[in-house]
Amino acid sequence: MKMRQNGTEQVQYPHIIYPEAAMSAPQAAVDCKNQTVAVGDIVRVVNLDKRFIKSFPEDERILIESMIGQFFKVIAMDEEGQPCVMREWHDERGIMQTHVIALDAEDMEKI
Image (tube, rainbow, N blue to C red; front, side, top):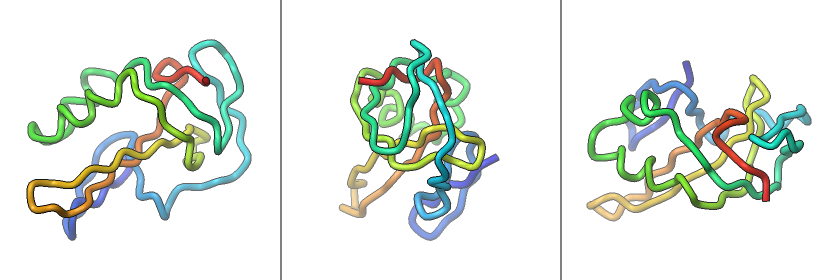
């Protein structure tokens, strides 16, 4: 299980890692069309598992769901070799929030 930091609180969620903990080792990963995906590539999120979305607090689920159909740059490969993308937004207090999500092959398409 990977970690996410929300302000100063640390919360565990599957498939989420700290940006600074992301491993950028050159590992082979593929997308839903079996195309090789590497750090720096642009991918479109085509799917996110409903159980994964439900693992977030209710007020954050819409932000995670809104990633579907959007384009992201692969910023790192995690320790399991999954490409990681980052979503940033400002919360109601204006504080920057970040989710770094490791994607499975069926969750992304390389552009």
